[in-house]
Image (cartoon, rainbow, N blue to C red; front, side, top):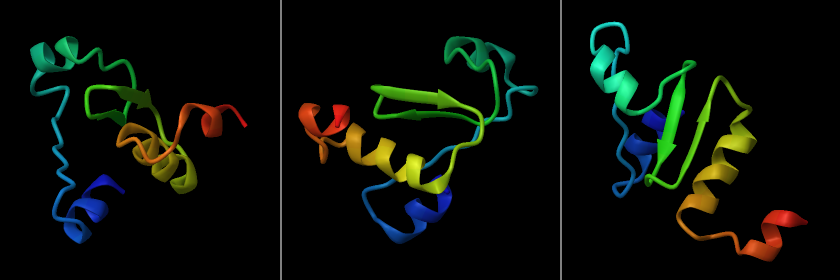
Length: 72
């Protein structure tokens, strides 16, 4: 999903790192499951999630969702 968004929106960038080939980098980013997604160094999650949750996480990371809206 991240790559699809990067192709559609010029301000979205996505990188893929093969954890088995770069174990030091995987350790640095705390990869304990795949996929591991880190958004703006603020939010992260591991494992597959529904598309709706993924989009919500991105909206949260870029500040499109306020604190009160997150808890409702």
